[in-house]
Image (cartoon, rainbow, N blue to C red; front, side, top):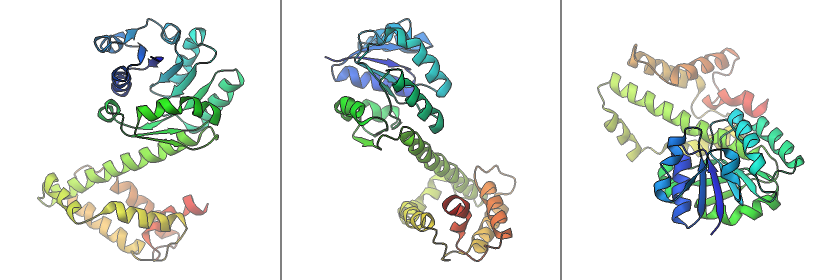
Amino acid sequence: MPNIAFLGTGLLGSAFVEAALQRGDSVTVWNRTRSKAEALAAFGATVADTPADAVRGASRVHLVLKDDPVVEEVVAALRPGLAADAVIVDHTTTQPASTAERVTRLLAEGVPYLHCPVFIGPAAARKAQGIIMVSGPQALYERVRPALEKQAERVVYWGERADLAAAYKLMGNAFIIGLGALVSDVFTIGQGTGVSAPDALKLLEFFNPGSMLQNRGRKMSEGNFDASFELVMARKDIRLMLETVGERPLAALPAIAARMDAVIAEGHGHQDFGIIAHDAVQG
């Protein structure tokens, strides 16, 4: 029975702990708000008073924290109790440059540390679903790989570049957050035309934005801006959307309109609207 520790028992961390206990692991937990850790005692977790106490005797230490400063604080606090051969598996979404610096520094100090951000929600974590991404030393990855493969249905190793998993995590969350914002704006357009949100989603029964995203994204990534939907025409359609919603709040479309206006002013109006990415893919 592996002895492991989870530091950070919010919604996701708690779900990971429940799943680990169901697999038969011995789990010690710590959280800044102790009541969140104590709630896991009913599932069989041991609650520690400090990060250092939580990791004593653990062969693997999982971090599920808020951000870089909290990671730095908790890692410093746990190190007095950390076994020499214990691997820190950090699931926190962090800034890529800070992640790279932290990995380099901790490894140089003899602390085995891997950055392993996830695309997993609490419900999926309880069922060992979703994706774990890993970047860092391959030898460390191979040590924890069997455990990670029990924790999620897919594990993606990006190689030894320390910040790469962090970068892909932010890009992935940009998709998630950006699409959510656009869905909100679709509902607002529906509201402006008397179409309910559930009825607006009926578009997805015959309209596949995922396929369009892949095809257009590939062309954009290759710098191919041959027009199939001219930027000036796309901007006209956004004008119609803005007119339709009136004073209702929008999440994404005003910023898209502003970017389109800037690129049209640069003389790109008759290229494909994907040209709004030209600075990102050609710069």
